[in-house]
Amino acid sequence: MLIKKILITCCAAASLLGGAAQARDTLRVGTEPTFAPFEFMDTKTREFVGYDIDLIRAVADKAGYDIEVVNMGFDALIPGLAAGSVDVVAAGMTITPERAERVDFTKPYYTVGLSMIVKKEDAGRFPDFKSLANQPIGVQIGTTGADKARGIPGARVQTFNGTNEAFMALTVGHVSAVIHDRPVLSYFMKMQPRAAKNMKLQPVLEDSQQYGFAVRKGNAALLEKLNKGLDAVRAEGLDKKIHDKWFAQ
Ligand code: ARG
Image (cartoon, rainbow, N blue to C red; front, side, top):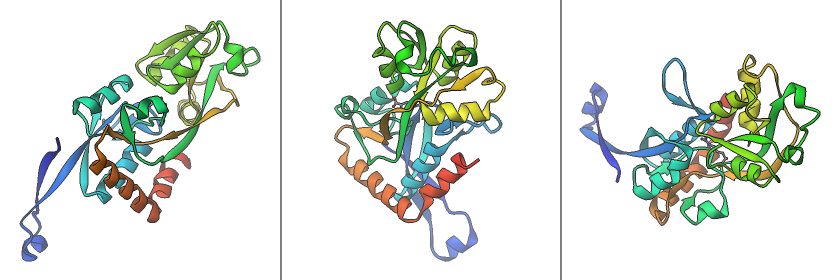
């Protein structure tokens, strides 16, 4: 399952110490990178970046692994674990009872709630989730935001593969609101002021949810290593540093 990666030690010091080749396994980490600041593509370097990417890299490092990030649709992540095409999911994935039947989650690593953005001109009309009855609502496929939207009476839920497409649908008026995890909505409002110019993030915050990294159901060995890695990262305060890097601007 794991790809063996041979790291050739190339520096003189290592060979002096008698270090020949060192092997470290690589964890294949599945994510859906339209979820800034947790995971997104750096437009310049074309690398996967974000809070989750830094955190899983640090956790994997403590567990003795390198990582390789694999780009997937959000709804393909859990099937990807089952099929063995990735070893871990790091995708701002909320721990839910339904998902916990299909995968095993690490300890929670982040807590969020759901919120919504609307067009500025509609801010008075659509202050909260229940005001969205009978409205078209944009969500990302397979998310807890999609579940929330489906629970609103008469809502016409439009699912999009990426978060960006849902924002676009709001811009062009195909939907009245986008429901998603609040930190992602607020990062969008702050970091993309032009796109968000005519939008308003509503104060509503519901459904406290916790993110966990997921592994294939029954992969107890990897789960334990990741949980221990998470403890070690926390003990060193690395999680706080990573948090500051992505949230303290
Ligand atoms: N927390 C929400 C969920 O689990 C949304 C996650 C979306 N993540 C992503 N990488 N697009 O359903």
